[in-house]
Length: 480
Figure (cartoon, helix red, strand yellow):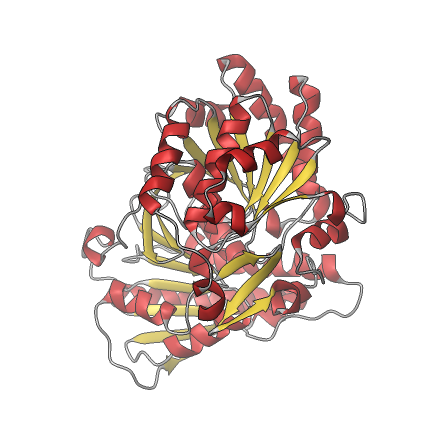
């Protein structure tokens, strides 16, 4: 990996960001980011996240002084028809608010950096609805899955996932084998062709090369973008935020000349297009603002390999009690309800006694057999609902809450904590965002740490909890 990344020519960061700031200075479009799970704020701070897409919420977002706001759709946890309906409603409401305020907007569909999600359904639904409601045409779709903090790089149009010191083509990873959102292609042009069932060909895509980006060839990239039409795909190579910044400079220049795009991106692009500054990682003092003597609460729902490894490392902490929720009982409703009651009672008792608690679902993924993908997704949502109910029914305020996994963190934020609008405080570790909940929420002002399932090293979850709780000693963990 070091050899591949080290072989690329360096760029002058100050010149790159000076040029970008100049282009963004008079760029007046409001940036609206639709986040298919809560982890999309992994790179930003000081921005709002709304958990619904009503006209009222959109008007609040448009009225904010910040250039960008997020809408949490949690669509990765929906079946396809639900996601399509949600995105059609969002597009209709955005068109209404934009026309009412006479304010243009740029729309980003923030998706998973490992290429999972309802693609191309979501961006195609947004495109068709907005073109109908605003009497306009989108020239292209920009695809930027690069996300450095998570070890996701695009080189020579192939998307890679960092595993240790190796760069593995995305199509060869566990993420590509996802039963709901699986794929085989690592080349992004071929991935688009695969996901669109051949409607968009790899040969027809526009490719933004690392060579042009490292040469700061803004004029050349702008000319490429000016030639994009008929919803052609624009594939952006990137291994560093500066690559995205060079591309964005050319992009804004092309948009000022009338070109229109929709974006399917990971979290890196939102920070750059939103002009969000760097910020140091958050400290315990910034997050734990009141010492109520209660323990923290960690909820682990994700089943990806990295999460299971991180959970095993966390279990070395002796001051944490671990409670397993037997999630496979979901197929037996009465027994599952009793299991949830047991877990909630135990969590309530432990947190009130000052003990930090980790609740985790069984590590084996529920497998209902071939052709049962949608039923498995529905059952996973029932499991997620049960984890959410722990927060929903909790009577004692934890000192903090950590949610591990995208669907898990979304459900806890919206249904468990009843958040309508949160502020992104920043990141506690690279790629791990923190919400500060609003006054309307179940626990106002609590630090809610949204820990993606596929981000961080094996030790990152343990290090995060140690920071929140204070230094702990390793050893055998309690388990219930």
